[in-house]
View 1 (tube, rainbow, N blue to C red):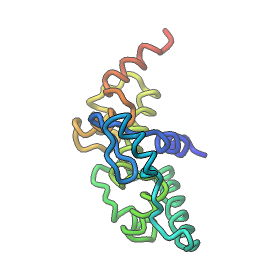
View 2: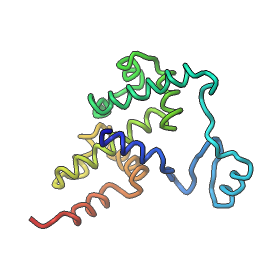
View 3: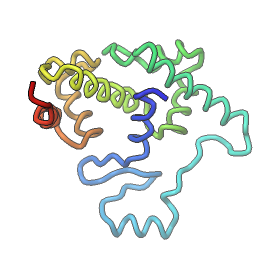
Length: 176
């Protein structure tokens, strides 16, 4: 498995917090009591996006998802700020609907979130390779159109602001 596939798995298992509430299934959860109530109702169980009896459908989406991971690891299309879901679907020889269903079924995220995750992971990798990079330069190198979008995505996936994370990583570097 590649670095990004392992990182993708780890991040897809974690729950992303945003503004004090998070989404899981179809329910907005704001407190621990909401979580307990949802568990009693069993509203937190993931809903399959395809018919479980349709093995061909599940296999088709799994194949699309595998091709997507390979494509993102090898070609790095997420570095293009103008990347569109339709462009990726065309490159994978599928359509946007099937691609979206594969993402929802296996990564439990939308295409923009999936792409942002790869961009943030690429930013962390670039910074670790070259800690002299400035955060203002880093966002452009990773395919984000704006600094504010980069900061929001970074905070979402890393639970810390990019400048704070970069400063902490610089502090962990051995003296040369």
